[in-house]
Length: 362
Image (cartoon, rainbow, N blue to C red; front, side, top):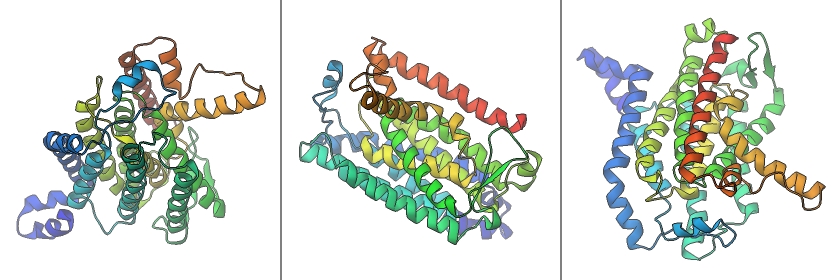
């Protein structure tokens, strides 16, 4: 909003010219998001406590997780509001990628809210039925995929994506780009959701991955940089850097209170829209395959669940991991919770640097 209002005023005062630059607006968005979360947290936490919005723990969890019962949850509301406010202030609201980002934020935020509400107020720790959640996730993914394919801003590149490591190989999915986007978006959404099981784990990992895609999105939208690195150039995609740094700011502010021992949890209200936005950042930057590195820890989490289920069924009761998602496996091995989170951070940071390094290796 400020971008649309203030950028035209550069003819009167040169300082307003700064609002034309994505980098300037991205950093302002990130700073605004972190300040909002830090300044509003106490008031928000008191609101949650007053209405009894506390964590409900399932009976099948590890014993020490039962101590987290009653800790305020649905903190994702604060994260979502910080991202939303930052985007309204500093993003180009006429940009198709920003509009789709807002759709994902609202849609998955609402879905997560209803899921958490059922857990808390109806005393049903499992929340919404899995079928219901998947139905609305796939419906959103279908809408996003159809818009990207039939109303593209990427022109002839709409169904193409960069291939990992090889500069002269571009994958063109054609009409199959629609199911690809759907599966990718739903998969990443749930991967982030699975990682939300330890204090500070999901919020920190989201910040790291969003930081990587802030850079990738900016490069994709910059003709000279994209050309130099031999990447697909999508002129409007650079605007997703504003989204990415809004996420970074919001989750870093939230991590201040969500780190061990957590004072608040984001709940599905936060993890679902964050996962959806991370998936969309990769789609907008045409770097879906690079998510294998940039979001590698998330894929390890959801991959452990998938492998466990398949192996369990094939072997009629045997398990690969002591417990899934993967972070619970290490808890079962008596690793302290903070150590698991810190080591996952280290892996995520290393994978993030490796993801960026592949751009030059190409």
